[in-house]
Every structure is written in C-alpha cells, then in structure tokens.
View 1 (tube, rainbow, N blue to C red):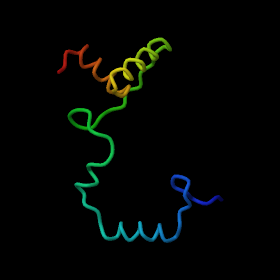
View 2 (cartoon, one colour; view 1 turned 180 degrees about the vertical axis):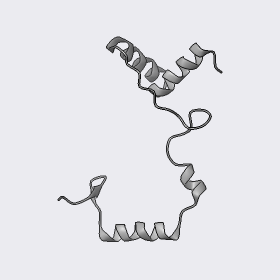
View 3 (spheres, rainbow, N blue to C red; view 1 turned 30 degrees about the vertical axis):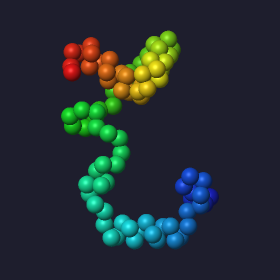
View 4 (spheres, rainbow, N blue to C red; view 1 turned 60 degrees about the vertical axis):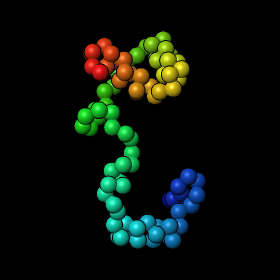
Amino acid sequence: MGEEAIDGQPVTDEMIQGWANEAESGYEVETLRKRGRPTVGDGPGAIVPVRMDAVLLAALNARAEQEHVSRSEAIREAVRTWAHIA
C-alpha cells in the first residue's frame, strides 16, 4: 500500500498526532457550521439531476460564465424566474 498524502505532501506521524490533539481538545461548533457550501434557500438543499443536450448545456455554460455565476446558480435563477419565485 502506498503512502498517504494531502495535496501531494506525505502525511507524517507528527501531522496525525497534531490532528488527534486538535480533535481531543474540541472544536467550536459554530465555526464548523460555517464551513462548507453556502445555503441555497430555506433548509437543506436537494440535489436534482437534470439531463440536457449538448447545445443547451453549452448555452448554460456560456451564460453562467458571462454572468460570473456557477452553473448551479444559473439553473436555480432560471427555475425561480419560471416558477415566479423571488
């Protein structure tokens, strides 16, 4: 079995011990809750797979890039507009 690495750097015993010490000392729950993806509305988000043909996907990618938003945000905005939700 190969050596474990993070971002291409080998993980050392000292690193593991440091992480264990940090975990044993405890974490601030509010700080941890702020990590990760931002919320997308009220409550937890749901993943909704959508199929698109190549032309529609290319148009979506181009418009999202032009508007400097993620593809997901572009889709959410389109659905909000279609569903008449602010």
